[in-house]
Image (cartoon, rainbow, N blue to C red):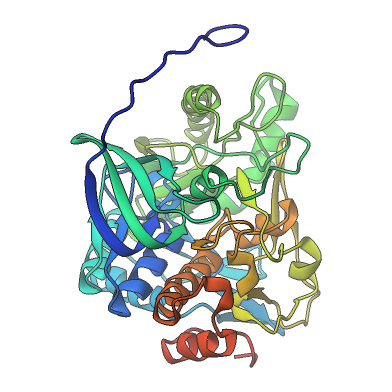
Length: 451
């Protein structure tokens, strides 16, 4: 790495071929991007989804999360599914492939739902194709073209076929890092504004577990780790480990790592050097924690079957939009006139060495509504942002970054894009009441009734 001011090379101007012209262009194939593209495609709009990997699912597949969080909420003490619409269609397809596990309890307060990664990839492909969405895999967005300030005309992507341009009328940034919004000049925050972001993790999967002996051991794993630290020189990257079985019982997923730079600050997912170091640190931590797991009953003969293709990024850029969802909104179960759906996941702050969870009051309705305004960046007229890079504060994002809320935001963005094109207006000018009606007719739960 070059120290000091970096030298530069002047790249000659060149003519970039246009890959295609679409009404709606979605960047990123995670839960938000999947839902946005499906909603747009089902509306009859020519739609392209751009994904840098060769498969969909975002952090759920590329980072090995293998777990849908945020589909459920604790409503007055009852655990209920509160995210529907496009999410239902995807889960039904995963279930048809035999890849969906029954919802399981999380901390005794809420539920999450594990899935098989391969089934998710196949189901997502088929769902998008059924909605007549074009998919461009192995395409890394690298910039954009704006003929006039405040309006995007095209995205540049780097592919094995070379650099290409993709034109669109409305763009939806589901990149996770807010790449399009940042390149277009929309204001954003990086972490908490003081260099602190939610810490990333490296996920891995374990096979040949003796489920009969290990089935209950994971609940006491944190105590075993604490004891190991007291009685030896062993140190773990974080407390609060998550080690749970997949549907087969012999295969388990593990979330036991935390990735920091040498100064202790979280790895920055928008920095190439940090990402490179993070991958190495993550694999080193996995090797170390797995040596410990081999001493836990039921794991003696197990082995690592897979380390996720990339580290799991929880937070980078957060767009500053027309409204920023806050920690208070989550904890106070906030309502909004422009609701597009709900989030029932608690505050989940991955801080140095641990995970801090904060819940809405027991007995409350257990979810906050998500306002349409959080999808609308400032200063760019034909762009919406959905997913973990939408408009939220640092702590608000720690709750609404999970897949349930991302499905909600994506479906709303795809539907709003169709309405904006029909009205020949910017997304911010569409009728919110009409949007809400469309979302409800398409199966979404907006949180008006506690059911």
